[in-house]
Image (tube, rainbow, N blue to C red):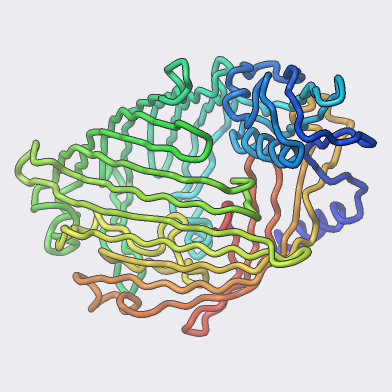
Length: 478
């Protein structure tokens, strides 16, 4: 409970502090509004690293455009939202300067983020914080160095070097170039890595993971490499194409009769396969970090194995889609709903390693964080009623000399929620009783939203079995 009291103290300071609400730019006061405005020129201030063409890519206007006066403020707001959603800036302000009766200059002022993060790694080897908290085993820690260079060369490129030692070891290098053509519609990326684990989950029993560990050596080794292409013609819709190679190797004991002969394809300890997946995203959220208005849709098709490697031949097809809707009910009350559905239409048999049901990543019913509900198909419906305790505000720390860190924005929301989920398991439901049953979880929570895409969620949940728990998460629930 110590973390609760620390957070309560921080909350009290934020509520009592004097701060201003962050707002987008507006038209000058006392202006007799004409029918339309002509954009004279764009003035960029504060983008010391980011190239102007990267900024212009996100704007709903350009110099020379004529915009109806009834649409100008919404156009400015949408442009600011687009720029904030690039994760390149902490603050964006758009102001208008009246040059003549219907001629405007647009002044864009930025506070860029810190883009180079040579951060140390100190993380947990479990599925999530709550799963680790049950064990409280400090030996299950990973450590190392994670170098992320966002906005590399000022072109929104991303370079990642990942070196993780300790319980689960991983080494990865990846590079993403979002735009390679003049129209800034196509991008590419590539990466490769190697991972090895002292301990792995080899099956689930009573909806809890069972682990196998070796003191010397590693239970699992995997290698992967991929290349990908992106297509983003406008602002909101993106296509991603990814082709890669994966190699999985486990020790003999894992696939033995004593542990799990259905861990991977065949009784061989080595699986090699090609991977292809395609994702389409349509994103109309106002603020991707923590949206209050708009909607989001994506669909992903992933195919593992194309018959290029035999003995055994890996063959899994999955399709997953997410639909999320956000809107304001009235005043400070907001609603959010999200539906996630995953299916494996032509893969009747899926080994343990190649299937993921509920309980992994953000695909879980709140109140069931301590469980995994494996299955070949699943669906989750999440619903949140939010009350805006503190709207987005700004706080300044004058003792910090760097503007990238001295200006903090934050918001607080109280929410109540109800989640419903169902996982279809045609293989191991006899030993995992939560599969093939409706799961219901509900509760209340407090969300703290701040800069650098940070969200802290503190929730008290109850599930259908009457179990209760206090859970901490570090990503939006929907």
